[in-house]
Image 1 (cartoon, rainbow, N blue to C red):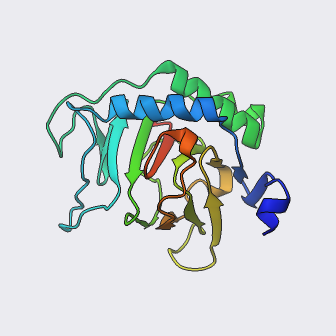
Image 2: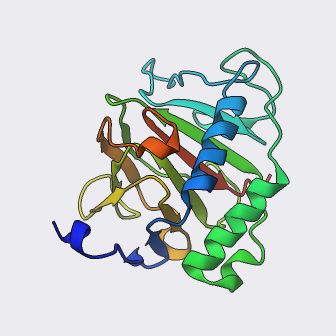
Length: 216
């Protein structure tokens, strides 16, 4: 009820981890949804990620700049069609630096040369287990942009996948940035609220655009 009565506010969930609600306006959200549709087309398109143990991720993924596969980076889709990874657009890097500046301050954005995007698509049954973004050789902040369905984003600690953690509701247009002491915190998505996407987003399901600096 409170979320209906009062505007959602910028929140520091942990040191270096900040949630900025409604950071993307509806027009920018629609533009990003359309871009994700284009990036998801083959070759090097949306794929199901398989783990070394033989399992599969329920969220499907496409990469830009560098191709992530558990647990490394490559220039081609080594666990898919073998095509070269799609290029990382400069405008997306600029968006990432602005996100970091707005969330953490301009000093954090000065050296954030984003060159990786991982785009995850969640249907109503998809989840993401607790994990750390630790395959990069850079400690630059991670930028997360949410589009479509609302999700529960679980943000934990740097030592264990279990408590303590904080559950944050991420809606379409929300920004979440984590760096500094929270850069290697475990995080995941235990639930997606199917059918909650705003109609103007033009999306069924949830898209998460995660921007990283490879250091490669």
